[in-house]
Length: 110
Image 1: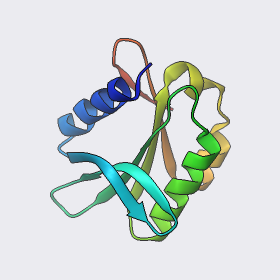
Image 2 (image 1 turned 135 degrees about the horizontal axis):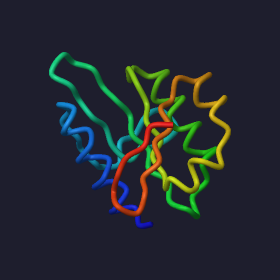
Image 3 (image 1 turned 90 degrees about the vertical axis):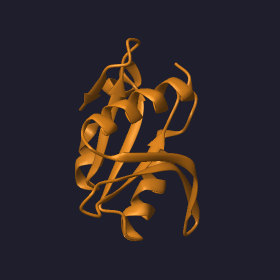
Image 4 (image 1 turned 180 degrees about the vertical axis):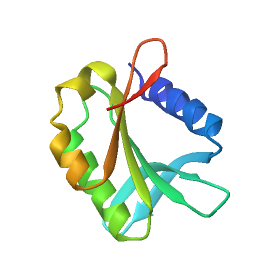
């Protein structure tokens, strides 16, 4: 599953929920995140996309840093197959929403 497809699917879902989504490399302290989403009430969400060959542990670190530097929420998006194999306890502890995207572009919050 390509990074473009994961980004497109997540952007579509967030826009349906009323967010404005921007994908670009955003420098946050020592890391970069893939994008961010904004709500009308000023809420900011850090977004990190991980394909099947990417390091999910690194993504968790990137999002933890984003939360420490002012983001209200964080989302890590990957394929549904990869997301189902991950232990959700770490994501719950750090308040990171784990999202799995299937081959049809449906977004599953795990």
